[in-house]
Image (cartoon, rainbow, N blue to C red; front, side, top):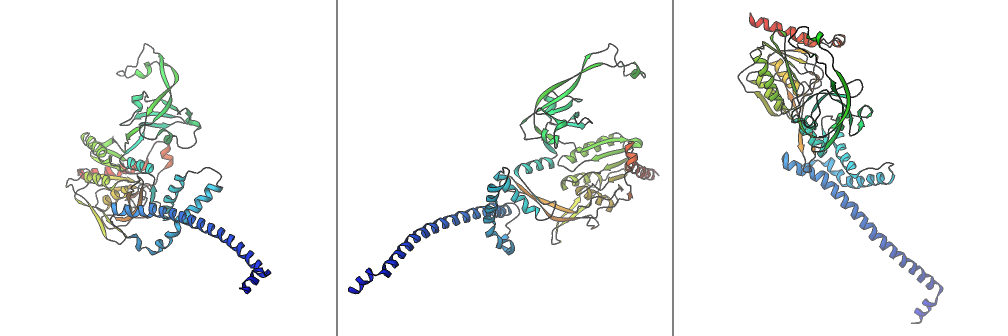
Length: 462
């Protein structure tokens, strides 16, 4: 048709066609960008989904496997934000990788996210453990740690003197001796090491650490030797010439049993037992020490819980069975006030000698369980300062990847129903530490405990 030909030849038509061609090419670019954007959005969505599954799906699996099938979907406030978590994490990680000055491991970022979830609770007792931290924590609860198994004291020089060996140690087997002065760890002078030297000695089980010591060895011995049977033997003893040399030993790290209980017999038939912590092996150590004191004719007992930060409920229950008859030890309730555990001492054999319990502001948790029961059931007297005041219980929940979480789940109450959290337990006899006396080697709190116990012992004999 003529009309059509005239349109094709017109200026307006040509301009329209050029515009159409330009738009068509732009459409190709738009189509390509659209596909690219769609793919990128899909990738981000996939990352978000994987983070969601790993973080929150893992929690649901954990709940089903360990603490029952809990429906966390009912929490609308948290659930409404989940869709944005993965995208934001990916974006923040990108900022770190692009701009952060120092190198950063991806695993560290991920573990930091998990730890941050529990730090947000504002509860110092709820936390996330990496697989390594969880293993170390479990070893500690069992009264064990991975190391070379030596008892040491730090000297003014900054070096450490070996004073003994622990059960399961590999140090003695490697050739170290009591009295050796540790001066280097893996070739590094420990006097110049920043941070905790003990942590450098510890490590993964089965690995090796090089320990360099200075040892005094007798090079010449005088023919006159010490005669221990003579009263004046100390005067007759001629000092031996000695020479000091450095020796290096490769020691394999292994699980070592910690000593959490020590004891001694004091004057007047007073037995003394110190409990450092309530670990899995603490009850057996306590029973051994109690038996030894009884065999030595113990007439009264002081149990020292000062600086004992607590530990396992099962451990303190076993020890309570040794010193008090049948009755309530502690009652545990959940956040709704429902009783979850009513823990009783079951043995009907009570300690047949008077008892005093030493406590201070660092006696916490399981220590306070025992102190509360001793006070409420009038098993003995408490001497020292008001205890720490930790009346809450944590549950440790392992995750499938070897990590774990510790969560505050319950409150506990003494036999009389007292909730001691953030207020502690006040002793029958409040005695502050006399630092001047302590510098002279006199423990005024222990002296008061002996005084109180002696009075109870005298009353029993009447």
